[in-house]
Image (tube, rainbow, N blue to C red; front, side, top):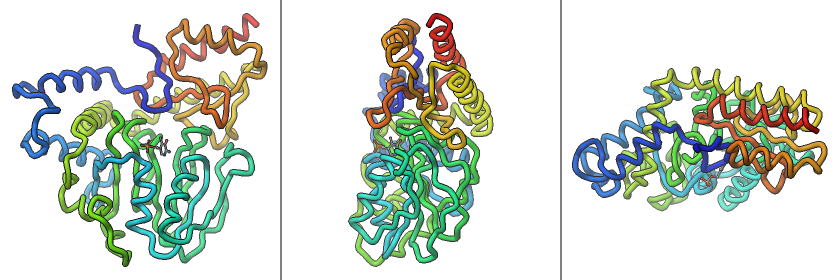
Length: 354
Ligand SMILES: *Cc1c(COP(=O)(O)O)cnc(C)c1O
């Protein structure tokens, strides 16, 4: 039985994408060779890379606006330092909204002064800071749009002329934003796009080339741009699978269509959390994430029963992160509304039988 996969990452991908990707491992599009045994310089793979890059820009509405899309390696975690390597000359600002922002700050500190412009650490990151002043002398301001672990999501962007950099690992392609507000966006593939092994970086070309330090080739966005995202052998399987997911998203109508479905999923689970006395939400209501719903049982004695019911229904991956506890239901693009319905039914059954 196919399980309902609420895992936080790596996580659920569309069934048809998994099927097509697995077929390509045996033979790519009838060419008599596997996707993972052809040269990355072959016409077939060059076309896949180009199509993945173009689809990313198209879905984000950034075609022809001076942006480049790159499929790099090293995960979002390498971007924590690549961003600073390429953009930080003197001082940068970070909004600290949890574990991932914390890690981004730690790496950036190797390259210059880092100011925590705002932080929600005082309440274990259960909210998104608002109405903060952005200093005018920053090289860039860094945000994490969705906080995968704490289940909070930035709803309103800061108004500033400072270049904006965003870690969108866990909510890219899930909701409509004016993506042109950002100068650099990065996202590990393994939450809304594909398998682990590649990281999407979307960068506005004119912010590059301004730092005085020398940048090693593999860490230099300009090198990757000049080589069409193939400076070295890319992670071919991860890029191909990401391309299929982006095509799947485009075919269904793009981000606006998936956003409607994501809103339905989120309101289904959050209304259950709010109505059911056995559950409490972790994040502040106004900052709740549509991707990761974090919640706890009000009576820990029900844990075993609830876990058993979930397991019997084929629900996978809802244990909360150790820094929050309780449960986390991750509802990325490929998770169906039906799967959320199954979880919500169990939550209400638990109340009925308690
Ligand atoms: C998962 C995640 C990361 C880490 O990504 P890696 O690709 O494992 O380095 C960074 N930021 C956010 C917001 C995440 O959800």
